[in-house]
Length: 76
Image (cartoon, rainbow, N blue to C red):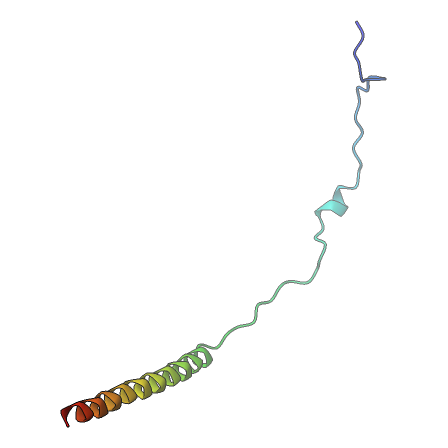
């Protein structure tokens, strides 16, 4: 019988003897993460929350003032 596609049969497979090279990592530097100070994060959060609170108070007072003016106008 003839097997199509195989020109020759190979029984032994040679592997390279460079096992030591493949075990070494490519980069020798270790990754170091920067630490984050929790106090800095808290201060940033508090600052943004205070800005939002001021904006909300401004909107609320303008609505109350507008309703007061509208009430006075309609009562006359």
